[in-house]
Image (cartoon, rainbow, N blue to C red; front, top):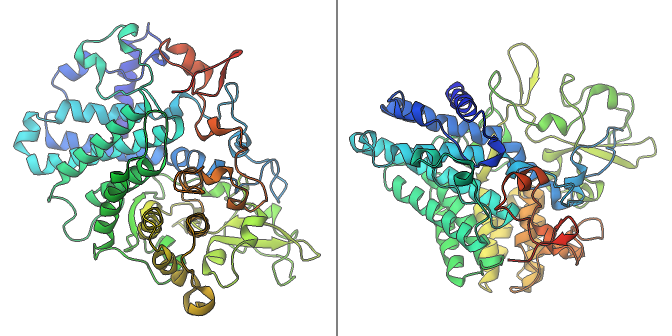
Length: 533
């Protein structure tokens, strides 16, 4: 299927050889799609939607870690504890500006949106759809859900973005001028996202999710989780003309309760088991990105060690020099990303998540030097090599509980019951209800406790940056990104005069390619700053 997508992309380049592809958001070869060579059978449509799932995998590290976690203040910058230079420090340090945007070309997501647009435009209401309604409804439910995810990712990153919901050349718009697309307002984008996720749920209807679901294929419950996250964000985060709506909070809660009451899902007893390659279809995983040996592997190898940088150099917590490849990595990793020591030290010793997530190591004086990631280490394949093939969850049941805690706090209720469900699993048999339970407090204290629980639960799962942007110091207050207490280093993620950095700047090449585009408010264009929305 990926070959088909690449072939279509090549045809696009040929047909528009005299038009810069940077000038457009979506292109498609009219002659090819009008020739009757595609979109004529159900297997063709199924294959293309499978290809859209591969797009999700190819963009996973950018969407999840770079856009969803790296800016959250938990990463070392400059040099790792093993002496290697770290990657993407501009992003991790929030040193973003018009000259250093961190990411370019809208993070490459419009090409994936194009693939979704194409399915919707060519299949919805077609003869294939009419003849195979139940199966095509599910495919359209998947496609609308995935497009909502892409636009929600762009919205949280850039605010108002260009809305490209159709393949314009199929409508006869072929000149560069036709293909220019300016930024929609934040409310227009959010309304479009809500429309897409509702269409997804409508198409799934009662067809999908009977019995056990395949948790690496987009499903109705994946759309319910995304809908909950969209409406929770909409209820709490104000952006330009998109104002928080009280009714959105109840909508988020209803979607979360629907998943909570679904008996197919729940917490596993042992935290480490959630991420085992031998147990990837467990009841906690709602939707995950699928990795497989010989197909595609993850970026987890950039969070570990190479033997020459670990063995014979550092010591374990008992003062014994490390003289073996403890994690059995077999020379497959480098430490280009590392979580801060202060974050590791914030874990309670009884918290089983600490040692399931990190391996810690020390110098000869017993001082903590650093950590490497133990989650998502993959497996040893048939040839005896370590491969990073652990599936990486986008949503799991712990999300349901901690988002419900957030909803409860916004309702002035008691979020402790949800926080303690997570904590009981984390502490296991060492949980003491008297000393380890959390008790309801004021709004900010509750928000901070929810954040801390999410920090420890979702390491390398793409949550931290979004969390400090959404969780607040008061119901109508500022994001915790500006609060000292929300970090582990005594300084906030963003300074008080950096509110514009809640969003990302657009790179110059993208701006210059389309005269209708304007820079993200607050970032300079030459010597001028863009007006706010």
